[in-house]
Length: 457
Image 1 (cartoon, one colour):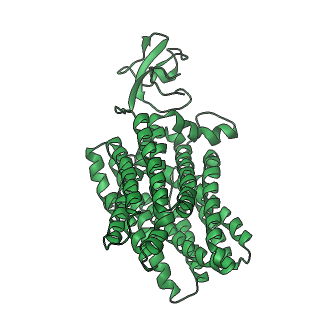
Image 2 (spheres, rainbow, N blue to C red):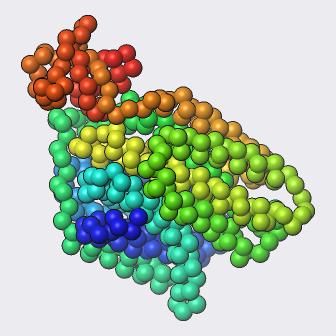
Image 3 (cartoon, rainbow, N blue to C red):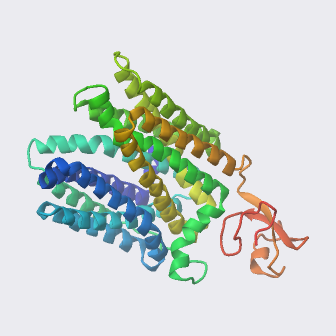
């Protein structure tokens, strides 16, 4: 897997990603402490609102930014996003009102909504070979998992030496270092859209691509299964550890660490497994595994007493991390396979937005149900949601998911350049109602719907 780092441009971008993630992790810890200083016992509601603002920014703004991304060089866009994030982090220690936190968080997450999809859309162009791109996806998954483990530990160590306000300075340094690495890297220019379109059409292009492509519709359902498991872990871990198991607060990061460890180990193993097995044969069983684990968690949550419950929780959290990693790691492969190069920024922006829409549903569901109806009900509800998502994904994703598809163009003349692009080896042939040919099929201006009936337009 590490061999992919021999590519100089990718190596610098990956380093920029890792450094920015560490800075983000420091900001998360510092923001929690800042919220407590500003709101005291209401700090939880402040953080909950900030999290909701984050998700709204991701869901609402990522497609809009993706639609405008072709107007700017990618390096300019990435560096600008990092500089905005650094400026926001530099401002956070000086706020004195809760509403100021909300405004700054919105600006910070808007910049992240610009940075992340743009970064994701560059990597498949830098690494066109499938094996190397898969390795890059696994490294990216590892980076996120390491951030969840390393940043809190680093923050805890720094807090023994400095106040939490200084953690924001670490965040600033991280974003500035990320910007410096991007500045020193030559990136390919964004490809222009296939044709001019209105702002609304460009902003919704990625979503329309997802809804028209069977494997991407299935991916959205799988994202919902991941969000169900992730919400159970993120929102309710502290409740399980402190209230249900009556353990010390220091055990909370251990439980979260088990989730990250399961994800990391799986991300390390996946590249070789994906060489032998297809994405569908791994991702769908992982979604059913998530549903089953949530069902077992609901049953175990009704138990009281017994020394087995703490190690069982650690094993369950590691299993959640592994199953979610199996779904999340190959996501970029599906998107690259399903979009033309010019449409990759819009496709990744749509994935970023729509997947966070799933979290916007499951976060409050896990919290509200856990608080009002109890942990077993919350886990069971999330399990049923994950099961429904897995069944839907199975129905949406064709078992024979080939890239090259025969299809008929009913609105193109046989002299149209597109029908001649395949060359004499695979010429278009006359078919009832139009001309038929075969090629790698993606949704675009000439192919507006999936050829379930053999027709593209």
